[in-house]
Image 1 (cartoon, one colour):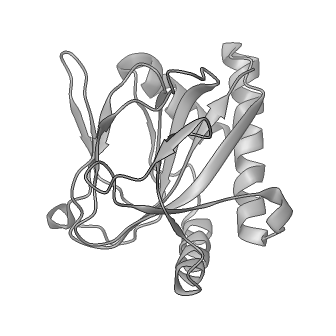
Image 2 (cartoon, one colour):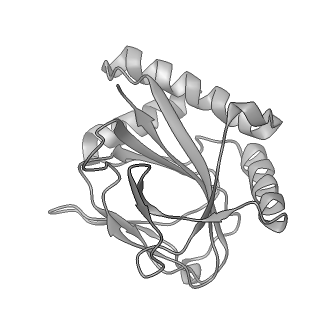
Image 3 (cartoon, one colour):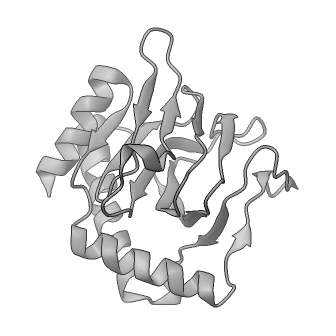
Length: 197
């Protein structure tokens, strides 16, 4: 477990973008993907908004994914297994990097064919609680022609990250502008933020 934590942290320190190819097990990714698709089939996903609870709007010209929030109160075994992993990572991050993370929030994200999310930052102007962004991908057999890359903008090192199964990406929520490029296949992930305050 600590190996995947170290790969996230070390690559973040080196490139401002942490990447672990195996943060989540393939089995957990597959079960989360099945659960996400079941929720979608039951029409329980909602069109994503931009902004926070103080000011939210839906704008399909900016983002066109659908989401469903994970919550421990759901008592879903696969969500709970994900939370166990995140709890362990937060404890490790706080101990090793003194980040003082005190909470988190995560949601499923489903991009249907043709969906995207235009360039944005993850930290709100009126709420600075989000410290780190994390995205875990649930897409087996993803191919370059499938699109849907996470494009992270950096001054001298733009990164294009393919959303392949088991990969997790980690970066500072207020530092890096990023976007999800148009996907040519159904694209599944668990996306969220580690919070402070």
